[in-house]
Image (tube, rainbow, N blue to C red):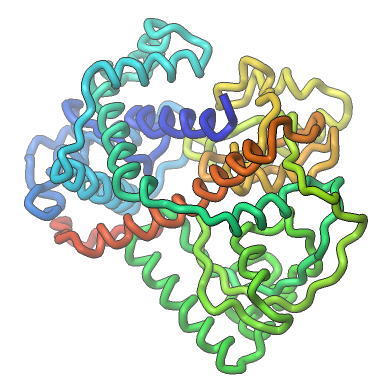
Length: 456
């Protein structure tokens, strides 16, 4: 199984296991359990189109999360903030479920059982043992199965409304193949970019995303109208390099987001990309400063490169903050570099299905992992260990064990590239679709003073 499938399966497990309070902002139902604080009144927390989310449903989920955090002696956000985060996710979930019902999408019992069996296997357990683990965390199995059905329904909805409509051109495939060579291969051109980053993760509230997009659009207009790009970056960018005017220096295409490489193919030096680029983390305004001949020579015929890689994954929200996850992985990296066994740390700490194999993901091809993981992996030399890498699944410590040219025909290599591009385009399209679906819905929050904030 490729890493994309492994990580998707892990994300699915995380989202439905969130009913145990492991991931506060994940979309998982928690009906039928005792509400927090002993509250019994079943008033309305929010109206969503022609349906409602009751206070009891909100209390149930908040109660599970609070109980789990208390068990782990983890800090608990202020209650109004926690309620806002949870309610916002419940609203998004309910809107999608209503759309799925309109589309006639349903999931049968057999599909739910197959999925739970795969989740158990991914965690190195049989289904009975996996069920025991879930119930030991205080989650009734029937509730867990209901959450699994919800996640499967949302996945089928996304496939119908978004993924099935994605197309990839031959030109995009050719450009992608040319950029996917790993750090040891020559590149025709290094690219020098400046950028302005406005933070807006995909799981942020709709209000925060819209505000970030408006700010990015305004900055793009200023950059196009002649304002000095570096000054705009220093004053507005939320990236670490803002103090340097957003200057990225020269980078090989393999180390840059693929959307930037695509933009560079149509830009002249000094030009600002005519549209804002949406990423999983926010919005980017980019300016191509210059191109130069890359170091080394390009292969006469571009080849995809497979990478043998292993990793340790720590999830944020499982009683662990982002700083704690980063610090723990930095400590592990230091010990491994001093001679400790990477695999043993993966066995002990990694929260991915690959933990039982010492974090070993085997040989993976371009496109079989999420972009942030792939970019970090591509920048590593053989044997090198990354710093902590943030993806939508948490923080990873990545080690490259080796590389080889991808086997198979040119047609097979093109198919791999087409899949990778399609996946990345689908992520962007899904974010846009979800935003439009939320905009078209009628939502009325009934809890006084509770406006869903940005989630982290």
